[in-house]
Length: 227
Image (cartoon, rainbow, N blue to C red; front, side):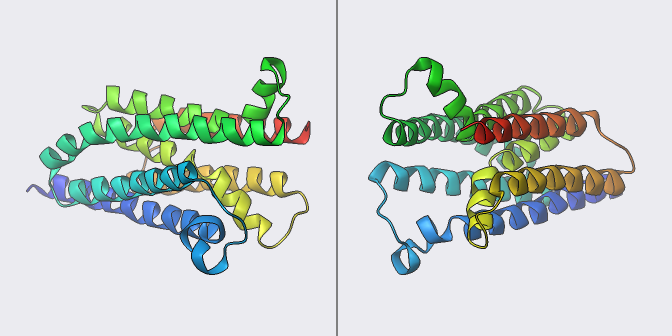
């Protein structure tokens, strides 16, 4: 292994550490209603929500595994596992849309197509679609590792609003939407800043994908405020 490749693998290890931090946020956010529900949960959840939670957990674990593989020079295994990752991403989006749709219909049983669309955005549906778009683009650019890894990171970040929302709600219910928007903007900014410092350059893929995450969360905030 050359010194250059060793340095690059260490940078991938940095992506693993970011993934760990995101995983902790996800765990804490969903601890009450999913991970620790048996001990501190307050409301029942359907079997499909259980499956949705397990699939989302699998995606996070896959991200961590993939970064570890590259950090250890196992790029071939990383690419092979990526095939399963493409299928898992499809399941994440499909179950996510199903779960969001059920939540909307449960709270607004008379919702029609016109009223369903803004509710879908308010329930973080747009973030889910952005996740799908970023993953598809990242897979299409899998041979361009520098772009691929940044898009996959932003795809993971795009899934964070529901976890942030639940985490913030543990402490306050005042302006939760504004706080979540601020946290998402801060998360994107931190990712861009740390990546730029580590690589000594601002990568375009991280800029436009991060901008999309911020824009989608702003639209989500506007839809939530309009409810």
